[in-house]
Length: 117
Image 1 (cartoon, helix red, strand yellow):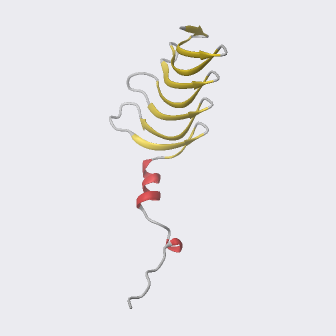
Image 2 (cartoon, rainbow, N blue to C red):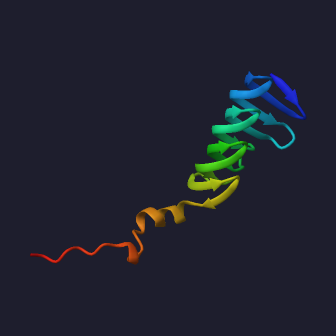
Image 3 (spheres, rainbow, N blue to C red):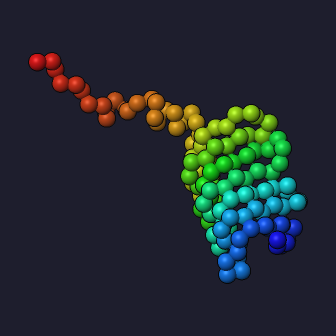
């Protein structure tokens, strides 16, 4: 276990850095990350949250930032939403993603069926 600047880390190390599976928590913010680390940062699959009633993020991280598809539960809600993140910024959520996959292709991209013989 390692204690750094108000944070506690329990997990794997390589070259003196957090690397592999582990859990990092901060008592000041009640923040917790559990998942994969690379070179001291969350990198790979992980779960991030700040305790009961707060947002919970289950998804991918790249060099410490939320990145890729994730399931996110907003504080106080019981259901998760599918969201896409890039470099720590939410790009779109379930409604926008559903329109991409369920709404079909734009009219210009549709192909007309050939006339019957």
